Length: 102
Length: 224
Image 1 (cartoon, rainbow over the protein chains, first blue to last red):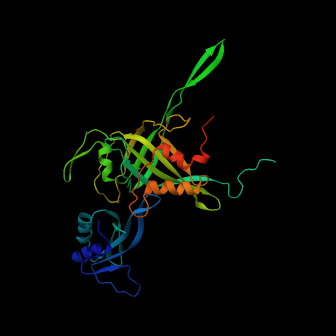
Image 2: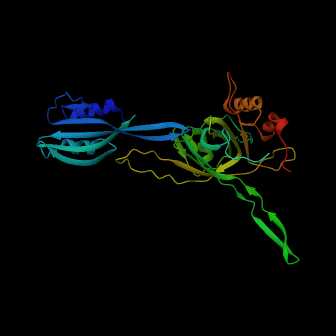
């Protein structure tokens, strides 16, 4: 499993606009991938943290209802799960959960 | 003086396990250099035996005989030292190539559990568990596809032991526990230096039960 910088590079390879935990003043251009820290999956051994995986909530936002980016992430990034999808302001949002090593 | 319960500082509990060390047995029966067991998650002690055989006479229970005790359990970890392979029936036939279903080498191990209380939490003390003459049996390994949740395979080995001579008036035993909250501090430091290695060239080695008893000589008393 790779780290966040590798994940960032992967996302940039399939989408020109990738935002990691963007501030409120950041203007998004579409299609884009917005992702943020969501949860840490940890394993413990010898009375301390042994390995940890960071789970990111990844939201793909596009004007295209059939945008291939969500499917590409699901197919190519290990430890990725589909969460949900919704439409806001005529923008199609697909939410995934992806993990990297922490 | 009246009894009291659960006073401050007396609310003891035990938790955790760490400092696992494996000491594979050599062909000559001695235990080799200890190696750290990374990823140790659980050691379950499941002794059995001491089963009662009741004898009756004169229309009532006359005597109760107990069978011998057997110390056994399971070890769980995310990984294991390379040196454990021979203990788990593997043999290296070439660099990076191993075959299984080979003779299983006995081993000794030590591990630590924590003793906590209500004032110092988990820092109150610890117990060092020593196990001699252990052998593991084959165990299942369920390799599973990578899926939407990260997970690591947890290995589990069931072990049994053959008791060894303890010395003195004690019966043979396969295990010994040293409690840091009551044991002599100097002897404990010496034991830890032997178990975990020390400064310079001191290699981690498993002492014999007699050596351990010798270290803690002033406080060893046979059970009545």
